[in-house]
Image (cartoon, rainbow, N blue to C red; front, side, top):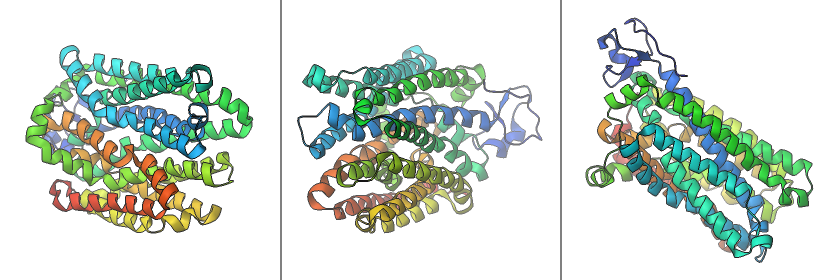
Length: 451
């Protein structure tokens, strides 16, 4: 459970519901009889929540390459089956903004705890449902329909799982530590990939191909369901406490009308979604797309390649941690801009590296994950920094949804489709376009100039 502390003016790094925005910079003004909450307590909740969501995310992503083309689209060639699988993969990103709006309405009527419980219950039900799905061989086209419905359920649930803790953290940390605290929640991505990658690598390496496709692939989805249950209780113990509820209310982190958000904050929604587009585009181009390319056009062992990606995710974790002090030293806008330039440079080497055998592919994966960590570590701040506190709760959720949809949702489908039919140079163009959009958004986004 989140810890609380009796306030002492000389103790840094804690804040109360009466602490002005800006965190411990103004901590001496807080009332001494009000419970004080350490930013680290919120950060733990953010990391737990994001790690569980990303594990679900990557379990589905890996299965969409290694499993679903074979068991749900056996009537198609492997390439076409993978493209169909990636189309269903994208459904979650299309559904996510609608999930945000639906569950915001639920929160207004029934409260944050009910909303979070329903969202994570839907996520667990959808994930477990995939584990029990009959294949095309047993159920025909209905199996594909059910997979699509469950994938949409995952997207709706991810939209509804927004708990406001990242925004609360952003509003209540010391001014010179905003980059550091912004990156903490992003650690959930590499943690989720590492666990998912290790589970699949173990199953592929220790089961026959028939056993893996018959029943082995289902186990990661069972694990994802169990992790969701643990994460649900961990997050509820945070957001349901009186101290956190008071602090969320004090910072005006409550749902606001989507119509009002679009009318008054439309520009910030667009800028926030585009500012981190380079990160979101790269996200799937080093995680999901290479798996599909290797499975289709290489003789490499998939378990060995997954282990290379797992090591890349370790580098991503290091990059995320380093992004905090770098952003605090040079500013988030400068950091994201510099990384967008480096991602643009990497885009020019995509064909050479992916066609460069095992060594070239490994370089692309490791360099790509390292750059992703440095950039993605500050992506959360990019999508929330522009909003006044009144609009931050809903605005941050919708901006994140749009960034995922535009930058990452269709990335595996587009990258594989273009590269298979026209060549890997088109993957370079796709990644370069994301970097250019980020630089354009950052050029007008003065709110990210933090130090």
